Length: 57
Image 1 (cartoon, rainbow, N blue to C red):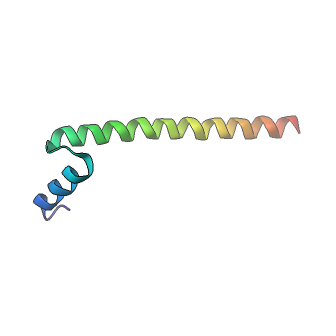
Image 2: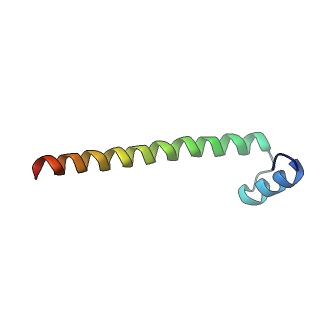
Image 3: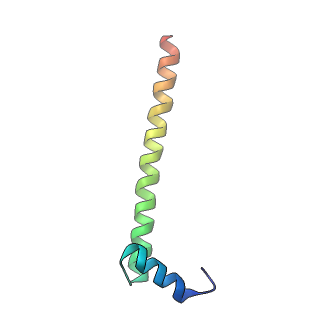
């Protein structure tokens, strides 16, 4: 993807529907930050639930 920038731009435009590379990069970064935070929250809740279940047993 780093070698052929035009192909990368066309692929990103096809997937995201945007031709503005800066906007696309910002949106993808924002989504990654949000979803990684949600994934961390779910994992933390699962660990706490497992730990509390282990204490009650």
